[in-house]
Image 1 (cartoon, rainbow, N blue to C red):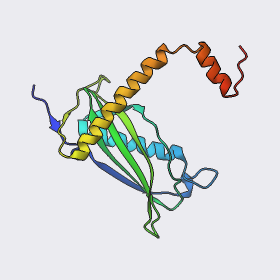
Image 2: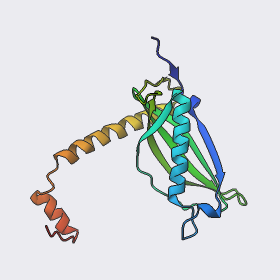
Image 3: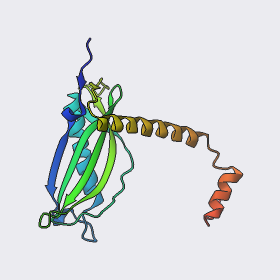
Length: 181
């Protein structure tokens, strides 16, 4: 069976939405959970468009909220496939907010969602391979490989770490934390 190849460009999705008072938290800013929901939606759309399959969210890398989003701003989310495994895809997402009166645009956050393609019975299915056509696409692919490797190494170190060691207990004590077991 021949492999299918697609470019990251073929996966690109953009969603824009005006932020309403119903999207705000108690401090009058747009609720982070609402933005996360939009990010999950665009990750699904991007992964499904690329793979031609139903996709589920497997993991979300760090989401740092860099700038608050105000009521009345136009939020734009852009997503593309940055990396593919056998059935998984890393979707890069960038969120910006624009003051529609001043046209000032601010970067609000970026994140990476790992999505997995599924068949109708819920089993993992293979996704197309990538054809990288720009230096930026190669950079994003390599960055994703480094994040995946670092995540695996971190899990291994976490598994091997002795939480009852003298070193660990001293680190806790140095943070002015009490332990009563």
